[in-house]
Amino acid sequence: MTVRPVLVALCRAADPPPADDWLAPEESERLACFRFERRRAEWRLGRWTAKVALREAIVAAGGEPPSPSRIAVRTADDGAPEPFVGQRPFGWAISLSHRGGWALCAVAAPGTRIGCDLELVEPRTEGFVGDYFTEAERMFVATAPDRDLAANLVWSAKESALKALRTGLRVDTRSVDVDVAPDTGTVDWSPFEVRRSGPALSGWWRRRGSLVLTVLCAPAAPSPRLFD
Ligand SMILES: CC(C)(COP(=O)(O)OP(=O)(O)OC[C@H]1O[C@@H](n2cnc3c(N)ncnc32)[C@H](O)[C@@H]1OP(=O)(O)O)[C@@H](O)C(=O)NCCC(=O)NCCS
Image (cartoon, rainbow, N blue to C red; front, side, top):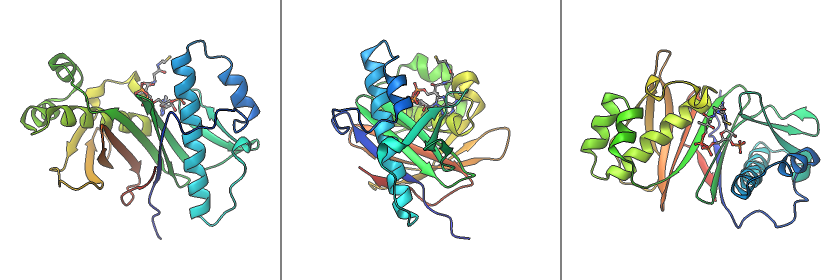
């Protein structure tokens, strides 16, 4: 069986059209409920990015994409995003992240567990690394040639794993242990692994300007295809 690569869309704050007519009616209702402009903007950017990624996935599968307003990205009880077309579950798995005016959405075939995360490469305190990272991760950060990249990469990989497992930060971040392959120095994707009490999970990461992106899926898939 051919394993399809995960499709990943990266969008910036200026990308969504100013009018809201690309939102599904239920999304427009939800958007109206946000009290804080920052959350409203990131949620809206995330929905736009999800629709870009879903469109690419449908086209790659040889389908005819529906108009964006027919796609609704709902929120499950645990907080995870779930795409619907019309009133029907779309079936494919998605994951979302937003940070600093950017949003990332990964789309994977039905039955896949998917998690993605986006972080700015920015300083992280010793306290942050000491509180949230395992001993092996702390050692990786301490010996890395670029400490900011290493710390944000590990954090992003953890968040991707906890999204794929759908627990989010309800569990101890040290319950997953990120193992990153030495930086190959390329601009493309590099692999990482996440060890935990169950089977290890495989993921991919890459740097993109001031950002670090991680994508993790189970079963494992080839390196993602990025649209930006
Ligand atoms: C999932 C989580 C780790 C992401 O945190 P973050 O780094 O601040 O935010 P990101 O932008 O990278 O990701 C946010 C997206 O993760 C997704 N998400 C939220 N909970 C998720 C879960 N349990 N599983 C998978 N994905 C989840 C959502 O799509 C969310 O974006 P949206 O709300 O705009 O749709 C964090 O939100 C979390 O732990 N949530 C669970 C705990 C919780 O619900 N706390 C109460 C919040 S009021």
